[in-house]
Length: 374
Figure 1 (cartoon, rainbow, N blue to C red):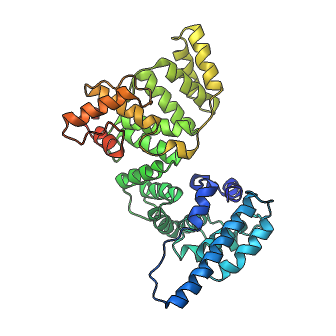
Figure 2 (figure 1 turned 45 degrees about the vertical axis):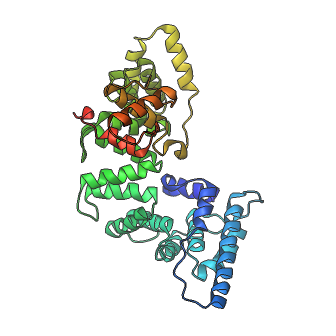
Figure 3 (figure 1 turned 60 degrees about the horizontal axis):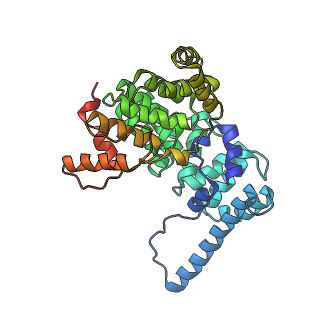
């Protein structure tokens, strides 16, 4: 599935929804079972048919990707088509992707949308998202931003990160819904929690300036650093500026120089002048050392920028604990005995279960502490 979806991403800019091939295959064959009112014999027959369809979709996905088999998109299309025509939602979604990307079949945006509609009507969240994008852009169907937002809402509630991002934009602009900046930020955060890089940056921006949420520059820096780690130049610039000013993070000129160098290298025009000014404050050897590290830097995948125990989350906890009078050591985003001990001390002082672990509950409690106000 990865190659197919990557090709589609290249032509419709939907890479923000794509995850690994294995995750996609799991989703394509992991539909929630519906209530069964058939007789045992009918149920067995139906289950056999469903299992066969699911197995064929898996096989088609592998053929699309060349995953352990010779790549053959045309054969993949031939395998999923009868299942799609019989009403199998995931097969309909895959067939829509094939039409949308032109793999294994002539590219046809109208046919892609038709198959997305059929899958979307069965609550296939990815199809709902792609249908929403088609309606938003007028690609293969008449442009209808209100309908697009309706489909983004359905898909977002089904867990699609790209749809959550688009729904956040809709709420920010009042596009198909009543404008609500606070709700917009909530959806940016939900998408960001799944590793959506642009959503992570937008969540950081909201907390940086207090847009729809209380201003919290430490929490903003957490989001900016997540986005930065995935290659978002604006996130890299904001992360560098946070370390330069010691705003939302401990001041660290070497880290600031590194992130601003990376941001400038990825096209951020505003990063270069600040990078050079900060570089003048470093020794020649230190500057060369940091520059070498910046030049060899590579972005991480979305999976490494999710959750509440990644580097940016640990660094946020370390920074917050230090401000509260505990001693987690250097706020370097690395979890060790000293950080664990500081977490235990904080938990004990606040009447919380003592775990010594970085968790979602701990981070949210630290985020909401008045130390971050203003």
